[in-house]
Length: 143
Image (cartoon, rainbow, N blue to C red):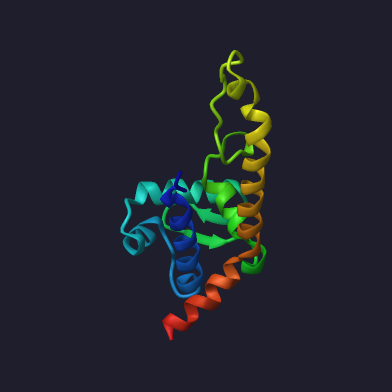
C-alpha cells in the first residue's frame, strides 16, 4: 500500500501558493515548473482541492489562492481531498472469503477492528499536522 504522489504534490502546491502568491500569479504552469509534473496533473489536483474548499482558482491565467488560514488546513483535509478512498476506508478488504473455511468465515470479525485501529491512528496523525507547520518548517530553508 502506498499513498499516491497526489498527496505530496498537493502539499507542494500549497507551499508554492503560500510562498509566491503575494508576489505573482501562481498558475498551473508555474506549479508544474516547481513540481516538475505535467500541468494537466496539477490542474486535476487543483480541481480536487477547489472542490474540497481548500483553494480558489481563477480560470485562465488568474492563478490559485488558499481559501482558508493555513492553521485550519490539516494533512487529513488534503488527504481526503486528493486521495480516492472508497467509502472512507483506507483498506480494501477482499469481499467474499469462503464461508466454508473457518478462517474465511471469521476473518472479517478478527481483522476489521484492527484495520480501523490502524486507519484511525493514521487519520489522527494527519489531523495533527497543518499547513502552518509546513510553512514554519519551510521558512528555515528559505532564509
